[in-house]
Length: 494
Image (tube, rainbow, N blue to C red):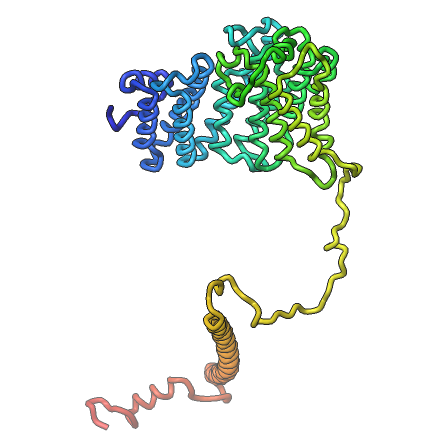
Protein backbone atom coordinates (compact mmCIF):
# COMPACT_ATOMS: atom_id res chain seq x y z
CA UNK A 1 0.00 0.00 0.00
CA UNK A 2 1.53 3.35 -0.98
CA UNK A 3 1.85 6.19 1.49
CA UNK A 4 0.80 8.96 -0.90
CA UNK A 5 -2.56 8.87 -2.69
CA UNK A 6 -4.26 11.24 -5.05
CA UNK A 7 -7.40 12.86 -3.70
CA UNK A 8 -10.48 11.06 -5.14
CA UNK A 9 -13.14 13.48 -6.36
CA UNK A 10 -16.03 10.98 -6.46
CA UNK A 11 -17.27 8.15 -4.29
CA UNK A 12 -16.68 5.62 -7.08
CA UNK A 13 -13.05 6.70 -7.35
CA UNK A 14 -12.60 6.18 -3.60
CA UNK A 15 -14.24 2.74 -3.79
CA UNK A 16 -11.94 1.78 -6.70
CA UNK A 17 -8.91 2.86 -4.69
CA UNK A 18 -10.10 0.85 -1.66
CA UNK A 19 -10.78 -2.20 -3.83
CA UNK A 20 -7.27 -1.99 -5.30
CA UNK A 21 -5.20 -1.51 -2.14
CA UNK A 22 -7.38 -2.62 0.83
CA UNK A 23 -8.38 -6.11 1.92
CA UNK A 24 -9.95 -5.28 5.30
CA UNK A 25 -11.90 -2.46 6.87
CA UNK A 26 -8.78 -1.31 8.73
CA UNK A 27 -6.95 -0.95 5.41
CA UNK A 28 -9.78 1.18 4.03
CA UNK A 29 -9.62 3.45 7.06
CA UNK A 30 -5.82 3.69 6.71
CA UNK A 31 -6.15 4.76 3.05
CA UNK A 32 -8.55 7.56 4.01
CA UNK A 33 -6.24 8.71 6.80
CA UNK A 34 -3.24 8.80 4.45
CA UNK A 35 -5.19 10.77 1.85
CA UNK A 36 -5.98 13.38 4.48
CA UNK A 37 -2.47 13.40 5.95
CA UNK A 38 -0.67 13.91 2.61
CA UNK A 39 -3.13 16.43 1.14
CA UNK A 40 -4.12 18.44 4.18
CA UNK A 41 -4.98 22.11 3.88
CA UNK A 42 -2.39 22.81 6.59
CA UNK A 43 0.35 21.57 4.25
CA UNK A 44 -0.73 23.61 1.25
CA UNK A 45 -3.56 26.13 1.07
CA UNK A 46 -4.05 25.22 -2.60
CA UNK A 47 -5.52 21.86 -1.49
CA UNK A 48 -8.62 23.61 -0.15
CA UNK A 49 -10.87 22.95 -3.13
CA UNK A 50 -10.03 19.28 -3.63
CA UNK A 51 -10.19 18.56 0.11
CA UNK A 52 -13.62 20.17 0.21
CA UNK A 53 -14.77 17.73 -2.49
CA UNK A 54 -13.12 14.89 -0.58
CA UNK A 55 -15.04 15.92 2.55
CA UNK A 56 -18.32 15.43 0.70
CA UNK A 57 -17.05 12.08 -0.58
CA UNK A 58 -16.37 10.98 3.01
CA UNK A 59 -19.90 11.97 4.06
CA UNK A 60 -21.33 9.81 1.29
CA UNK A 61 -18.95 7.00 2.26
CA UNK A 62 -20.21 7.27 5.85
CA UNK A 63 -23.82 6.91 4.67
CA UNK A 64 -22.92 3.92 2.49
CA UNK A 65 -21.18 2.11 5.37
CA UNK A 66 -24.14 2.89 7.66
CA UNK A 67 -26.58 1.40 5.17
CA UNK A 68 -24.39 -1.70 5.02
CA UNK A 69 -24.62 -1.95 8.81
CA UNK A 70 -28.42 -2.06 8.52
CA UNK A 71 -28.35 -4.82 5.92
CA UNK A 72 -25.42 -6.98 7.07
CA UNK A 73 -24.36 -5.81 10.52
CA UNK A 74 -20.74 -5.24 11.48
CA UNK A 75 -19.44 -7.67 8.87
CA UNK A 76 -17.09 -9.66 11.08
CA UNK A 77 -13.47 -9.00 12.07
CA UNK A 78 -12.44 -8.34 8.45
CA UNK A 79 -14.85 -5.50 7.72
CA UNK A 80 -15.57 -4.06 11.19
CA UNK A 81 -17.98 -1.47 9.86
CA UNK A 82 -18.43 0.16 13.25
CA UNK A 83 -14.67 0.74 13.47
CA UNK A 84 -14.77 2.21 9.98
CA UNK A 85 -17.46 4.64 11.11
CA UNK A 86 -15.36 5.61 14.15
CA UNK A 87 -12.33 6.20 11.94
CA UNK A 88 -14.37 8.25 9.47
CA UNK A 89 -15.68 10.38 12.33
CA UNK A 90 -12.13 11.11 13.51
CA UNK A 91 -11.04 12.03 10.00
CA UNK A 92 -14.06 14.28 9.48
CA UNK A 93 -13.31 16.00 12.78
CA UNK A 94 -9.67 16.57 11.81
CA UNK A 95 -10.68 17.98 8.42
CA UNK A 96 -13.24 20.23 10.10
CA UNK A 97 -10.49 21.59 12.33
CA UNK A 98 -8.29 22.23 9.29
CA UNK A 99 -10.94 24.22 7.42
CA UNK A 100 -14.13 24.95 9.39
CA UNK A 101 -15.68 27.10 6.65
CA UNK A 102 -15.40 24.37 4.02
CA UNK A 103 -16.71 21.72 6.42
CA UNK A 104 -19.70 23.88 7.35
CA UNK A 105 -20.62 24.56 3.72
CA UNK A 106 -20.38 20.85 2.81
CA UNK A 107 -22.54 19.85 5.80
CA UNK A 108 -25.14 22.49 4.92
CA UNK A 109 -25.33 21.23 1.36
CA UNK A 110 -25.64 17.62 2.53
CA UNK A 111 -28.34 18.51 5.09
CA UNK A 112 -30.25 20.27 2.31
CA UNK A 113 -30.10 17.08 0.25
CA UNK A 114 -31.35 15.07 3.24
CA UNK A 115 -34.24 17.49 3.79
CA UNK A 116 -35.26 17.30 0.14
CA UNK A 117 -35.15 13.49 0.31
CA UNK A 118 -37.37 13.50 3.42
CA UNK A 119 -39.85 15.86 1.78
CA UNK A 120 -39.97 13.63 -1.33
CA UNK A 121 -40.67 10.52 0.75
CA UNK A 122 -43.49 12.29 2.55
CA UNK A 123 -44.99 13.26 -0.81
CA UNK A 124 -44.61 9.69 -2.10
CA UNK A 125 -46.62 8.37 0.86
CA UNK A 126 -49.78 9.54 -0.90
CA UNK A 127 -48.88 7.47 -3.99
CA UNK A 128 -46.99 4.43 -2.70
CA UNK A 129 -48.19 2.13 0.04
CA UNK A 130 -45.96 1.97 3.10
CA UNK A 131 -44.17 -1.25 3.90
CA UNK A 132 -41.40 -2.75 6.01
CA UNK A 133 -37.92 -1.43 5.25
CA UNK A 134 -36.45 -4.65 6.63
CA UNK A 135 -38.13 -6.48 3.76
CA UNK A 136 -36.93 -4.00 1.15
CA UNK A 137 -40.29 -2.26 0.86
CA UNK A 138 -40.95 1.48 0.68
CA UNK A 139 -40.66 3.44 3.93
CA UNK A 140 -40.93 7.14 4.58
CA UNK A 141 -38.18 7.07 7.20
CA UNK A 142 -34.59 7.97 6.23
CA UNK A 143 -31.91 5.34 5.82
CA UNK A 144 -29.78 4.03 8.64
CA UNK A 145 -26.65 5.56 7.14
CA UNK A 146 -28.18 9.01 7.25
CA UNK A 147 -29.21 8.57 10.90
CA UNK A 148 -25.74 7.34 11.87
CA UNK A 149 -24.22 10.37 10.12
CA UNK A 150 -26.49 12.61 12.18
CA UNK A 151 -25.21 10.76 15.25
CA UNK A 152 -21.63 11.70 14.34
CA UNK A 153 -22.53 15.37 13.84
CA UNK A 154 -22.36 16.49 17.53
CA UNK A 155 -18.90 14.89 17.76
CA UNK A 156 -17.66 17.18 14.97
CA UNK A 157 -19.41 20.49 15.76
CA UNK A 158 -20.44 21.94 19.15
CA UNK A 159 -24.06 21.27 20.06
CA UNK A 160 -24.26 23.70 23.01
CA UNK A 161 -24.32 26.87 20.91
CA UNK A 162 -27.59 28.74 20.90
CA UNK A 163 -27.50 28.93 17.11
CA UNK A 164 -25.10 26.98 14.95
CA UNK A 165 -24.80 26.98 11.18
CA UNK A 166 -24.83 23.16 11.02
CA UNK A 167 -26.26 21.77 14.28
CA UNK A 168 -29.38 23.96 14.31
CA UNK A 169 -30.57 22.87 10.80
CA UNK A 170 -29.84 19.25 11.73
CA UNK A 171 -31.94 19.59 14.89
CA UNK A 172 -34.82 21.08 12.90
CA UNK A 173 -34.57 18.23 10.38
CA UNK A 174 -34.78 15.61 13.15
CA UNK A 175 -37.83 17.39 14.58
CA UNK A 176 -39.50 17.35 11.18
CA UNK A 177 -38.81 13.65 10.75
CA UNK A 178 -40.29 12.77 14.15
CA UNK A 179 -43.36 15.00 13.77
CA UNK A 180 -44.37 14.24 10.18
CA UNK A 181 -43.14 10.77 9.22
CA UNK A 182 -45.81 8.06 9.59
CA UNK A 183 -44.99 4.97 11.67
CA UNK A 184 -46.17 1.61 10.34
CA UNK A 185 -43.64 -1.06 11.33
CA UNK A 186 -41.17 -1.97 14.08
CA UNK A 187 -38.36 -0.67 11.89
CA UNK A 188 -40.08 2.71 11.80
CA UNK A 189 -40.55 2.86 15.58
CA UNK A 190 -36.90 1.87 16.08
CA UNK A 191 -35.66 4.64 13.82
CA UNK A 192 -38.02 7.07 15.51
CA UNK A 193 -36.61 6.24 18.93
CA UNK A 194 -33.11 6.69 17.54
CA UNK A 195 -34.07 10.15 16.21
CA UNK A 196 -35.56 11.04 19.61
CA UNK A 197 -32.34 9.96 21.31
CA UNK A 198 -30.39 12.11 18.84
CA UNK A 199 -32.48 15.17 19.66
CA UNK A 200 -31.87 14.62 23.37
CA UNK A 201 -28.17 14.20 22.66
CA UNK A 202 -28.11 17.50 20.76
CA UNK A 203 -29.93 19.42 23.49
CA UNK A 204 -28.64 17.91 26.73
CA UNK A 205 -25.51 20.09 26.88
CA UNK A 206 -27.53 23.32 26.86
CA UNK A 207 -30.49 21.73 28.74
CA UNK A 208 -32.94 22.66 26.02
CA UNK A 209 -36.31 20.95 25.66
CA UNK A 210 -37.03 18.93 22.46
CA UNK A 211 -40.85 18.73 22.22
CA UNK A 212 -40.88 16.35 19.23
CA UNK A 213 -38.71 13.81 21.08
CA UNK A 214 -40.85 13.80 24.22
CA UNK A 215 -44.06 13.54 22.17
CA UNK A 216 -42.67 10.58 20.23
CA UNK A 217 -41.57 8.85 23.44
CA UNK A 218 -45.03 9.32 24.94
CA UNK A 219 -46.64 7.88 21.80
CA UNK A 220 -44.23 4.94 21.71
CA UNK A 221 -45.00 4.05 25.34
CA UNK A 222 -48.74 4.00 24.58
CA UNK A 223 -48.18 1.11 22.17
CA UNK A 224 -47.69 -1.09 25.26
CA UNK A 225 -50.79 0.13 27.10
CA UNK A 226 -53.36 -2.34 28.38
CA UNK A 227 -56.00 -0.83 26.07
CA UNK A 228 -53.97 0.20 23.03
CA UNK A 229 -56.85 1.04 20.70
CA UNK A 230 -58.50 3.58 22.98
CA UNK A 231 -55.22 5.13 24.12
CA UNK A 232 -53.69 5.70 20.68
CA UNK A 233 -56.57 7.99 19.74
CA UNK A 234 -55.17 10.62 22.14
CA UNK A 235 -51.56 10.23 21.01
CA UNK A 236 -49.52 13.47 21.08
CA UNK A 237 -48.21 12.80 17.57
CA UNK A 238 -50.50 12.31 14.56
CA UNK A 239 -47.95 9.93 13.00
CA UNK A 240 -48.81 7.31 15.64
CA UNK A 241 -52.50 8.08 16.09
CA UNK A 242 -53.35 5.86 13.09
CA UNK A 243 -51.25 2.92 14.27
CA UNK A 244 -54.38 0.88 15.01
CA UNK A 245 -54.27 -0.35 11.40
CA UNK A 246 -50.68 -1.64 11.73
CA UNK A 247 -50.48 -5.21 12.91
CA UNK A 248 -46.78 -5.06 13.84
CA UNK A 249 -47.39 -2.17 16.24
CA UNK A 250 -50.63 -3.50 17.70
CA UNK A 251 -49.01 -6.86 18.49
CA UNK A 252 -46.09 -5.40 20.46
CA UNK A 253 -47.78 -5.90 23.85
CA UNK A 254 -48.85 -9.43 22.97
CA UNK A 255 -45.36 -10.35 21.72
CA UNK A 256 -43.85 -8.86 24.86
CA UNK A 257 -46.06 -10.95 27.15
CA UNK A 258 -44.74 -14.14 25.51
CA UNK A 259 -41.14 -13.38 26.51
CA UNK A 260 -39.43 -14.61 29.67
CA UNK A 261 -35.98 -14.60 31.25
CA UNK A 262 -35.01 -11.24 29.77
CA UNK A 263 -31.51 -9.92 30.55
CA UNK A 264 -29.70 -6.66 29.88
CA UNK A 265 -28.02 -8.07 26.78
CA UNK A 266 -31.38 -8.99 25.26
CA UNK A 267 -32.87 -5.49 25.39
CA UNK A 268 -30.16 -3.75 23.37
CA UNK A 269 -31.81 -1.63 20.70
CA UNK A 270 -29.95 -1.93 17.42
CA UNK A 271 -30.39 -0.51 13.93
CA UNK A 272 -29.38 -3.80 12.31
CA UNK A 273 -32.10 -5.53 10.35
CA UNK A 274 -31.70 -8.90 12.07
CA UNK A 275 -32.02 -7.38 15.54
CA UNK A 276 -35.12 -5.40 14.57
CA UNK A 277 -36.81 -8.57 13.33
CA UNK A 278 -35.77 -10.65 16.36
CA UNK A 279 -38.24 -11.80 18.99
CA UNK A 280 -36.60 -9.57 21.62
CA UNK A 281 -37.36 -6.42 19.65
CA UNK A 282 -40.61 -5.58 21.58
CA UNK A 283 -38.78 -5.69 24.89
CA UNK A 284 -35.86 -3.71 23.49
CA UNK A 285 -38.18 -0.96 22.20
CA UNK A 286 -40.01 -0.60 25.53
CA UNK A 287 -36.91 -0.71 27.72
CA UNK A 288 -35.09 1.74 25.46
CA UNK A 289 -38.05 4.14 25.67
CA UNK A 290 -38.03 3.89 29.45
CA UNK A 291 -34.31 4.56 29.60
CA UNK A 292 -34.71 7.61 27.36
CA UNK A 293 -37.44 8.80 29.71
CA UNK A 294 -35.11 8.41 32.70
CA UNK A 295 -32.27 10.15 30.87
CA UNK A 296 -34.55 13.06 30.01
CA UNK A 297 -35.59 13.31 33.66
CA UNK A 298 -31.94 13.55 34.65
CA UNK A 299 -31.20 16.21 32.02
CA UNK A 300 -34.14 18.52 32.75
CA UNK A 301 -34.11 17.95 36.49
CA UNK A 302 -36.28 19.79 38.98
CA UNK A 303 -36.96 23.45 38.31
CA UNK A 304 -38.00 26.15 40.75
CA UNK A 305 -41.27 26.97 39.00
CA UNK A 306 -42.59 23.41 38.64
CA UNK A 307 -42.52 23.43 34.83
CA UNK A 308 -41.25 19.83 34.66
CA UNK A 309 -44.74 18.60 35.51
CA UNK A 310 -46.04 20.01 32.24
CA UNK A 311 -42.96 18.86 30.30
CA UNK A 312 -43.34 15.22 31.38
CA UNK A 313 -47.13 15.19 31.63
CA UNK A 314 -47.71 13.17 28.45
CA UNK A 315 -44.92 10.69 29.17
CA UNK A 316 -46.11 10.19 32.73
CA UNK A 317 -49.64 9.65 31.50
CA UNK A 318 -48.40 7.10 28.96
CA UNK A 319 -46.47 5.31 31.70
CA UNK A 320 -49.63 5.05 33.81
CA UNK A 321 -51.45 3.35 30.93
CA UNK A 322 -49.08 0.36 31.31
CA UNK A 323 -50.53 -0.81 34.61
CA UNK A 324 -50.53 -4.56 33.99
CA UNK A 325 -54.22 -5.00 34.75
CA UNK A 326 -54.79 -7.45 31.91
CA UNK A 327 -54.13 -10.99 33.05
CA UNK A 328 -53.88 -12.33 29.52
CA UNK A 329 -51.06 -9.92 28.67
CA UNK A 330 -48.74 -10.21 31.64
CA UNK A 331 -45.48 -8.32 31.57
CA UNK A 332 -42.10 -9.99 32.19
CA UNK A 333 -40.47 -9.33 35.53
CA UNK A 334 -37.57 -7.44 33.96
CA UNK A 335 -39.97 -5.06 32.23
CA UNK A 336 -42.03 -4.56 35.42
CA UNK A 337 -38.90 -3.59 37.32
CA UNK A 338 -37.90 -1.13 34.60
CA UNK A 339 -41.37 0.46 34.62
CA UNK A 340 -41.37 0.71 38.42
CA UNK A 341 -37.93 2.33 38.46
CA UNK A 342 -38.99 4.87 35.84
CA UNK A 343 -42.18 5.65 37.76
CA UNK A 344 -40.24 6.26 40.99
CA UNK A 345 -37.82 8.61 39.27
CA UNK A 346 -40.66 10.45 37.55
CA UNK A 347 -42.51 10.85 40.85
CA UNK A 348 -39.43 12.20 42.63
CA UNK A 349 -38.61 14.63 39.82
CA UNK A 350 -41.90 15.98 38.53
CA UNK A 351 -44.21 15.56 41.55
CA UNK A 352 -44.65 18.79 43.48
CA UNK A 353 -47.35 20.32 45.64
CA UNK A 354 -46.51 23.89 44.68
CA UNK A 355 -48.70 25.46 42.05
CA UNK A 356 -47.18 26.51 38.78
CA UNK A 357 -46.99 30.28 38.54
CA UNK A 358 -48.23 31.77 35.25
CA UNK A 359 -45.65 32.85 32.74
CA UNK A 360 -44.73 36.50 32.89
CA UNK A 361 -43.28 38.64 30.20
CA UNK A 362 -40.98 40.34 32.67
CA UNK A 363 -39.56 38.86 35.81
CA UNK A 364 -39.96 40.58 39.13
CA UNK A 365 -37.17 42.62 40.64
CA UNK A 366 -34.55 40.63 42.48
CA UNK A 367 -33.40 41.30 46.04
CA UNK A 368 -30.23 42.87 44.71
CA UNK A 369 -32.20 45.32 42.58
CA UNK A 370 -34.55 46.23 45.45
CA UNK A 371 -31.75 46.83 47.94
CA UNK A 372 -30.89 50.46 48.78
CA UNK A 373 -27.65 51.51 47.18
CA UNK A 374 -24.98 52.18 49.78
CA UNK A 375 -22.44 54.96 49.36
CA UNK A 376 -20.12 53.83 52.14
CA UNK A 377 -16.61 53.11 50.85
CA UNK A 378 -15.50 49.54 50.93
CA UNK A 379 -12.52 49.19 53.22
CA UNK A 380 -10.21 46.25 52.91
CA UNK A 381 -7.45 45.22 55.23
CA UNK A 382 -4.32 44.80 53.06
CA UNK A 383 -2.78 42.48 55.63
CA UNK A 384 -5.61 39.99 55.23
CA UNK A 385 -5.82 40.10 51.46
CA UNK A 386 -4.32 37.04 49.81
CA UNK A 387 -3.74 36.87 46.08
CA UNK A 388 -3.71 33.65 44.16
CA UNK A 389 0.02 34.19 43.63
CA UNK A 390 0.64 33.83 47.39
CA UNK A 391 -0.94 30.40 47.69
CA UNK A 392 1.48 27.78 48.94
CA UNK A 393 3.95 30.32 50.35
CA UNK A 394 4.97 30.87 53.93
CA UNK A 395 3.63 33.88 55.80
CA UNK A 396 6.99 35.67 55.75
CA UNK A 397 7.49 35.05 52.02
CA UNK A 398 3.92 36.13 51.22
CA UNK A 399 4.38 39.37 53.19
CA UNK A 400 7.69 40.04 51.49
CA UNK A 401 6.15 39.52 48.04
CA UNK A 402 3.18 41.71 48.98
CA UNK A 403 5.50 44.56 50.03
CA UNK A 404 7.55 44.12 46.87
CA UNK A 405 4.43 44.37 44.71
CA UNK A 406 3.25 47.43 46.67
CA UNK A 407 6.68 49.10 46.24
CA UNK A 408 6.59 48.33 42.54
CA UNK A 409 3.11 49.82 42.18
CA UNK A 410 4.10 52.96 44.11
CA UNK A 411 7.31 53.33 42.09
CA UNK A 412 5.36 53.09 38.82
CA UNK A 413 2.82 55.60 40.09
CA UNK A 414 5.57 58.07 41.10
CA UNK A 415 7.31 57.74 37.74
CA UNK A 416 4.01 58.26 36.00
CA UNK A 417 3.34 61.46 37.99
CA UNK A 418 6.87 62.76 37.28
CA UNK A 419 6.41 62.18 33.58
CA UNK A 420 3.12 64.07 33.66
CA UNK A 421 4.73 66.97 35.61
CA UNK A 422 7.67 67.18 33.19
CA UNK A 423 5.34 67.23 30.24
CA UNK A 424 3.30 70.03 31.80
CA UNK A 425 6.39 72.12 32.69
CA UNK A 426 7.82 71.74 29.18
CA UNK A 427 4.50 72.76 27.68
CA UNK A 428 4.32 75.92 29.82
CA UNK A 429 7.97 76.83 29.06
CA UNK A 430 7.37 76.58 25.34
CA UNK A 431 4.22 78.64 25.66
CA UNK A 432 6.07 81.47 27.49
CA UNK A 433 8.97 81.45 25.02
CA UNK A 434 6.61 81.60 22.06
CA UNK A 435 4.75 84.54 23.60
CA UNK A 436 8.01 86.49 24.23
CA UNK A 437 9.32 85.81 20.74
CA UNK A 438 6.07 86.94 19.19
CA UNK A 439 6.17 90.28 21.10
CA UNK A 440 9.77 90.98 20.01
CA UNK A 441 8.98 90.02 16.44
CA UNK A 442 5.96 92.33 16.39
CA UNK A 443 8.02 95.29 17.71
CA UNK A 444 10.78 94.69 15.17
CA UNK A 445 8.35 94.51 12.28
CA UNK A 446 6.76 97.80 13.46
CA UNK A 447 10.19 99.59 13.38
CA UNK A 448 10.98 98.21 9.95
CA UNK A 449 7.66 99.51 8.67
CA UNK A 450 8.34 103.03 10.11
CA UNK A 451 11.79 103.21 8.49
CA UNK A 452 10.44 102.11 5.14
CA UNK A 453 7.70 104.72 5.38
CA UNK A 454 10.21 107.55 6.14
CA UNK A 455 12.48 106.53 3.29
CA UNK A 456 9.55 106.43 0.91
CA UNK A 457 8.54 109.98 1.96
CA UNK A 458 12.04 111.36 1.34
CA UNK A 459 12.28 109.75 -2.09
CA UNK A 460 8.88 111.14 -3.01
CA UNK A 461 9.94 114.73 -2.09
CA UNK A 462 13.14 114.47 -4.14
CA UNK A 463 11.21 113.29 -7.20
CA UNK A 464 8.79 116.24 -6.93
CA UNK A 465 11.70 118.76 -7.11
CA UNK A 466 11.28 122.49 -6.56
CA UNK A 467 11.94 124.01 -3.20
CA UNK A 468 10.75 120.99 -1.23
CA UNK A 469 14.02 119.02 -1.06
CA UNK A 470 17.14 118.71 -3.13
CA UNK A 471 19.46 115.76 -3.23
CA UNK A 472 18.71 112.55 -1.54
CA UNK A 473 18.86 109.12 -2.97
CA UNK A 474 22.02 107.97 -4.74
CA UNK A 475 22.09 110.78 -7.31
CA UNK A 476 24.12 113.16 -5.02
CA UNK A 477 26.73 110.47 -4.38
CA UNK A 478 27.20 109.95 -8.09
CA UNK A 479 27.73 113.70 -8.66
CA UNK A 480 30.39 113.92 -5.89
CA UNK A 481 32.13 110.86 -7.26
CA UNK A 482 32.28 112.45 -10.71
CA UNK A 483 34.08 115.54 -9.24
CA UNK A 484 36.57 113.30 -7.47
CA UNK A 485 36.45 115.05 -4.09
CA UNK A 486 36.13 111.91 -1.95
CA UNK A 487 36.33 108.17 -2.16
CA UNK A 488 38.61 106.12 -4.37
CA UNK A 489 39.83 108.17 -7.35
CA UNK A 490 40.73 106.96 -10.71
CA UNK A 491 44.17 105.51 -10.75
CA UNK A 492 43.83 103.92 -7.28
CA UNK A 493 44.96 106.89 -5.10
CA UNK A 494 43.10 108.62 -2.28
